[in-house]
Image 1 (tube, rainbow, N blue to C red):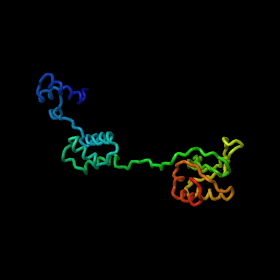
Image 2 (cartoon, rainbow, N blue to C red):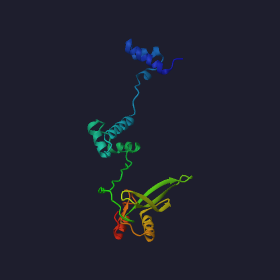
Image 3 (cartoon, helix red, strand yellow):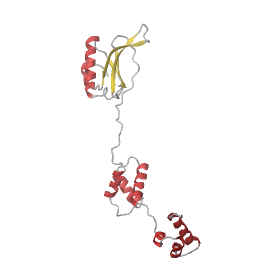
Image 4 (cartoon, rainbow, N blue to C red):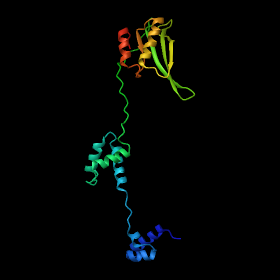
Length: 214
């Protein structure tokens, strides 16, 4: 059995190659003249979506209005296509969602390595993360004292505290430090990375009040 698509192709061939009229070609192929004259049309919505995606891919940091005006000026879209229609398609493509931007960390002046000469000169603070068997993640705050050995160029670490919890904000870090200071005395300097807990205003203010370099 000949499929309608094949009949349509036969009729097209008769018109194109044999120069028959559409009426006669349709009768020979066994299809209606309307089916032969029908031209499939692409969805204009899909065409517009593809144009929007092409612009966003080329200019990833453009907002909606830049994309819209570029469509009107450069892509020659129909003038009847207003911004509301473009915005609706823009939202369907989820291009209106806010893009995540990485936080800019404050610049720290690079300092030469400190030569340790006495106890409690430098404490180091760092976090580690892991997960329980049920999938919940937890963190550990490790506070170490860097100790000088018999030679001035040899050092090791003495663990002063390990704090474990699901959340360890800046205020919790301060409480842990205060507890350790009561037992070991006050350090001259805290060495840590640029984690959000360590660059918080509260921890900076506490260190200034304690005259501890951070």
